[in-house]
Structure formats: C-alpha cells, structure tokens
Image 1 (cartoon, one colour):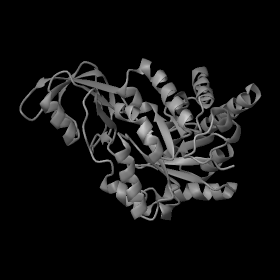
Image 2 (cartoon, helix red, strand yellow; image 1 turned 90 degrees about the vertical axis):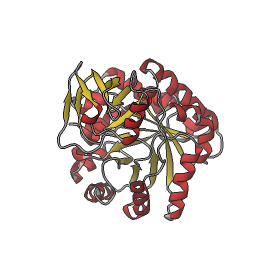
Image 3 (tube, helix red, strand yellow; image 1 turned 30 degrees about the vertical axis):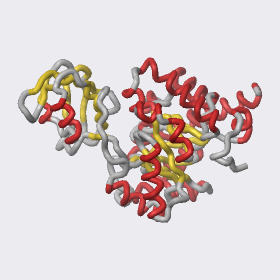
Image 4 (cartoon, helix red, strand yellow; image 1 turned 90 degrees about the horizontal axis):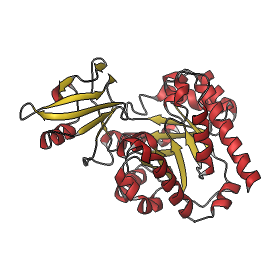
Length: 350
C-alpha cells in the first residue's frame, strides 16, 4: 500500500504498513559492480550520491555500475543525490594539511570560504570554527591584520579539500541552490535519479526554491528530502513538512549545531513531529561508523539503529561506511538485519 505522504496517519498504522528502507552511499569502496550486487543482496534498497565533491557527469561510471548491479539483482533502484546547497566547505588543496593540537595558524593558511573569512574579520576573537563535521576545532584569537585572523587548533587532525566548515553560533547566509546544483538537477532524470536531498535547510523558502528548479527541469516528480542540520532547520520543522516528501535527521552537522549531549533529545523531538504530522523521516550519520575499519559494529551502534526504527523512521542510511569503508557489504547486512529485527519487534509488541 502506497502511503499518502501529505495525509496524517497514526503511529501504529505507519508501523503496520511500512517497510523501513535501507540506503548506502556510493563511493570508491563500492565502485565495483560485484560489491554493489553484494550490498543489494544484503538488503540495500537505494543509494545516495554525494555531489558536494563531484557532478553527475563526473560520477557516470559509478552510477552505471550501481544501476547495472541493481538490474542484475532484479530490483528497481533508488538513487538519491545530495546537493551542495548552502553548506560551506574548504576549498582546493594541493595535499591534506595536518593541524596539530595547540598550534596557531593564520586564517590565510587555509582555503576558507570568503563568507567565513568575512565573519572572522567582523568578530576576530572567540569564534569556534568546526571543520570536517566537527572532527577538527579551531578558535579565533585575534586579528593579525585587516585581512586575516589567528586561529588556535583546539582539536587537531588531517584536513583535506572540500571538508565542511561551520562557525559555532554565527549565521552565514548563502544561496540554497548553487549553479552546480542546477546543472545536476537538469541531468537528474537522464541518470535515473529518484530523489534530491537538500542540505542545511533553513526554512520553507529553501525547499520552494529547489522544487521550482525541479519543475523547470521537468523533474517535479522526484522526491524532495529536507536535511535538518542546523538550528534554523530545527525551529522551522513545522513549516518544512508540507514542502518536502521526507525529513532527514542528519546527525553529523546537527551535532555541531547543538551540544552532543543534547543531540539525542533533538532527534527524539524531530522524530515525534514527523510522526504526529504523518511525514516520513530518515535517520543518518555514524550509524555503523566503527565498520569503516572493523568487520563488526559496536553494541551501541546496533541499539541506535533499532531505536531509530522504534521511533518511526521510514528509512536509515549509512555514509562513509559504504563510500570509503573497508566492509561495505557487511555494513549493509548489519544495518538491514537490525532494521528487520526492529520491525519484527514492533509487530509482536503491538
């Protein structure tokens, strides 16, 4: 039975009718047709392609491999594209740069976005700069000159090009749809794309802008996923729901926007709003993060997946686990088996 995504339904009816979808993320670790077949056989319903680093045209070989694997397995594949949107990212770098704890660098030593440099100049002391989904933390100390600021490395690491940049407590306005996004939207149908994920949604205007671009490209029938990754998205939840097909609780950057110890409560509240309003929602980020390098997940990770399903998630997704991880097919297997066990628990318990 196909759910009417815009008609409220009860929590129990939702659980009774739905099957939670399993998504992986395409990348170099699963670029072969054989590996993708193993992932589909393990339970993967669809795949995400992150276009923050490339375009559909540049990813054509990977897409063909995925669609061919799906055809071999006899399924109709879902392909979601994650657009650039308003997210800020590190620029081009000749090679990754190691930032050591406690060292001090000038802002000019990093290819920071112009908007970030402008914000640092306006408030040169005490701003927290989060890089690579918060793995690296810098704090501004003082202005060196009118054009740059000193940054102290609080939490270091290896920084490479195109990693995310966020300023804690500082709002920077950027366009919801980039020129690269528009080009990808125009090519979406030709590549078999079934859904578009809009990152860092701030309000309904962002979703309306994306929907207008989809309509211009004769792709208005594609599903629109609204990624909640900042405080604006959290506060705008009620107004976002009528303008998207599915909410994405994206815990990576969301965990930068709020203190980590508050993140579980935020996830619970967002899940509850989606259930109450009958909107499908996806839970993503670090669901099986340990499996990037290990063949077996932690007990905490499988409990996290299980509880996301109990909260009413209509889909779950892994990212780096399949894109760059060492065990892409086993990761999907653990994800799928845990989800199915949670569904069985719900049926028995209800």
